[in-house]
Length: 149
Ligand SMILES: [Zn+2]
Image 1 (cartoon, rainbow, N blue to C red):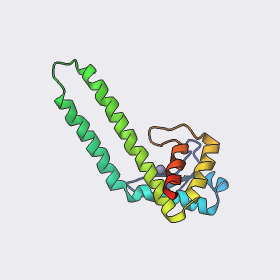
Image 2: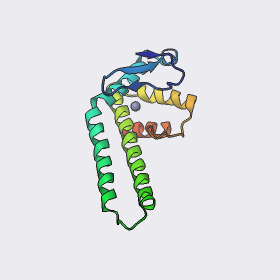
Image 3: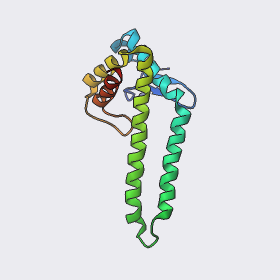
Image 4: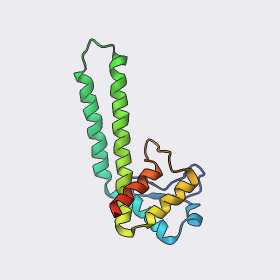
């Protein structure tokens, strides 16, 4: 599926339907090999969707279980804060790992093309701004370079 939405800056995969959405401007920005590398990254997400969902459920179960082990005499809000912080960090680590693995999946088929894509995205959006779901572009390139070394 191709999107004209200005809000969509990156390709997305619906892990339930397998539908991959690609921003229209990508077709003017990337070569054919780079587009293939992007699609392979998204296929990588789809391929490991069950494992990823299982990891998310396990992390949430661990944190929920931990919340029952907290001493009952602590005021609820004070006890909950570090637990929520832990949950956020663990979920972020899982999502970042999921991106590294999708990059590696793409690189396993097309080698350098995904690095070329990341460099162009870095030039457009910056190399050093990680989000909750995505590591920084600099770290993603470093991860792939380590793999090829
Ligand atoms: Zn991704």
